[in-house]
Image (cartoon, rainbow, N blue to C red; front, side, top):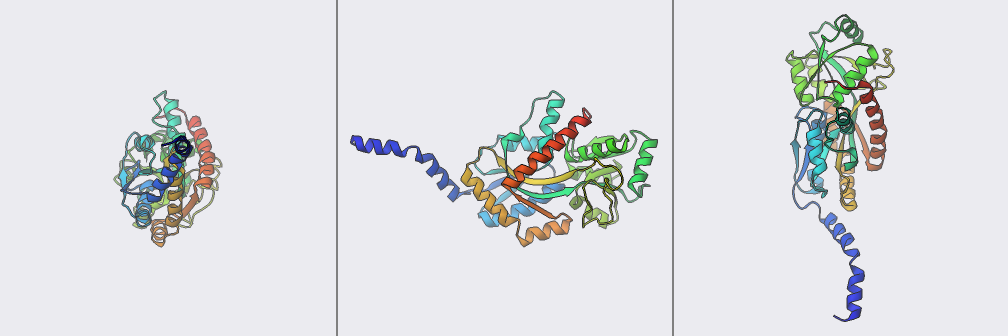
Length: 327
């Protein structure tokens, strides 16, 4: 090789990473993809993940395996596992709004932080439902006001279940309790599914959860919904008033579900996933699955989703700091 050949080869070297990245993205995926859900089956994240995973399989041409990896309270174990995974597009995360809250809770208790929000790249928002306050149909409370009046007479005696400390359901209930000036007894579980099972079994007396989680139980006559944490009423529960309507003006909480990857994911693979999710979120099967469950599609592509996460996270972190240390 003469000097000119050496110079040409050297000049081409900076292009190699870009070329290999583009080629890799074009071939992606060459094997199965894992979608971590940091909660047990039956909750909002799981409800979002399963139809999305099935649709992604058809588009990407490889299996997308839902991995329910619960633990740590509020989803921290699964979130942390996804944060530590190789940024190659083969480990994705379908998680909830508690993603931003949990690192702040770790700091609040002076615990090692399991992960940081900055480790993740938003790919697409899937759902964004308000949390709803639900009680057993056999409970004595017919309205949210009934619930509040009873709670004021018996501070700390009415129990509610959540997906774990500082998870989405916990923050929603504490936000309501603070606004209503009542004290409830928090009973944490490993996810919304187990918390719902506890409510149905009589272990706890109330829960805040997503419409899609509650709708089948309400239709079966097992649960009653008393209030809506959103800014407006929703189609699946049109007769349920918002807490803001009832005078609790600072109660606003949404349990959104979104797909994330690692922040160091190569841009061509991120683009491939974004394009695939755009197709997923117009799939008739996905739209039907969400409509049947009572959750409406709330799709956002990465740029809009990233902006939404920043705004919503700031509001939730402020709420956690106001709640302070609770078990």
